[in-house]
Length: 391
Ligand SMILES: Cc1cc2nc3c(=O)[nH]c(=O)nc-3n(C[C@H](O)[C@H](O)[C@H](O)COP(=O)(O)OP(=O)(O)OC[C@H]3O[C@@H](n4cnc5c(N)ncnc54)[C@H](O)[C@@H]3O)c2cc1C
Image 1 (cartoon, helix red, strand yellow):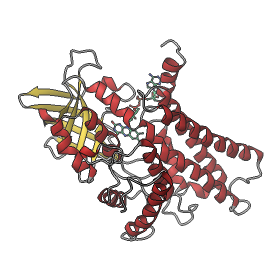
Image 2 (cartoon, protein in one colour; image 1 turned 90 degrees about the horizontal axis):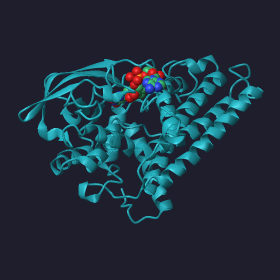
Image 3 (cartoon, protein in one colour; image 1 turned 90 degrees about the vertical axis):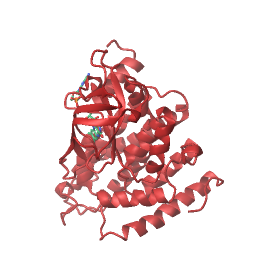
Image 4 (cartoon, protein in one colour; image 1 turned 30 degrees about the horizontal axis):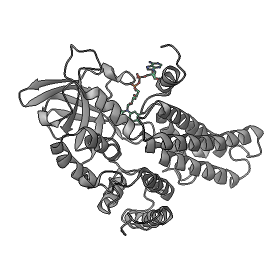
């Protein structure tokens, strides 16, 4: 890959676009056609390829192997990535959350140990926060970490742990002081998934895929040097970690939603008469108009957020999360109605509507109003911190 540090924005955009187009074909050709963008092996191979070519740590400092690019360049990269149709990697939690967290809060030894492995994609990470009794109310978590000399002994259960079945490492929150107020007695630990006492149990999702897991910890030894920050200071680290990805998280999702909108319109126009709902139905036309507006409103939200992101991230991210997840669900519900019963068939069914996997995307969109804070929680944040309503 050509050095890109000295290119102007347009040249950088072209470089990213051309590189992705060429290399995606090369990596896809290694797999039997048609390769699914959701195939985990393909996703990992593609992500390894990206990292080997230097497309990781784009905004990280050079001292830690990053490219120190400004955020505007990152936005261009993410826009072109989403347009290319390239699959999402499997180490998104490592690159998006753990890396920036270590850069801000990690010790020098932790940065030297973990960042190079992450940049090269040799170690995949998962995030062990949620528990059966602690989701929206995360600070209610009960997994314990008891200090025993040079290590903690971790016991408890995590759930909905994406990628735990393929992860080499997990960053988790565990209670180190049960007598402290609930937000104050929590520590942030880095746990090697090969340690004895860890059991990973997959959870099958309704779309047939399996990305989630339950993870059980039974007296798992975690060296003290794997604690990030001070003991009992994990809550603040976890909250900051959640904000690192926020500004750029939605860029590829907005680009993809705009493309889905265009695709749906094109597929709907090409449908045989009598299949699905006709495009001249006024109610359907109104829903298309609404989705068109949704995409534009989302772009404006995202622009405002990027302009203000140099400061401390505020509750504005909740608007974007809420509006994106709910309008994306509306778009995919429209797809189901417009495309007719065949759109409900899975990608393996020969009668399914085109290879864009409408059924899969529709089912997956149900998770979007839950992950990273449910819609109810986002509304609570907006009500209390933006509108100023009483708790
Ligand atoms: C696709 C996906 C990937 C995920 N990946 C991970 C991961 O990698 N690691 C991880 O740790 N977790 C992960 N999660 C878990 C996710 O963070 C939780 O599902 C989420 O925080 C909600 O918690 P819960 O499922 O326990 O629901 P609960 O908190 O039990 O909520 C149940 C319902 O009650 C409502 N509710 C709860 N509290 C309030 C309130 N105060 N006011 C109003 N309504 C309320 C909620 O909105 C929801 O409708 C993932 C979830 C999804 C869907």
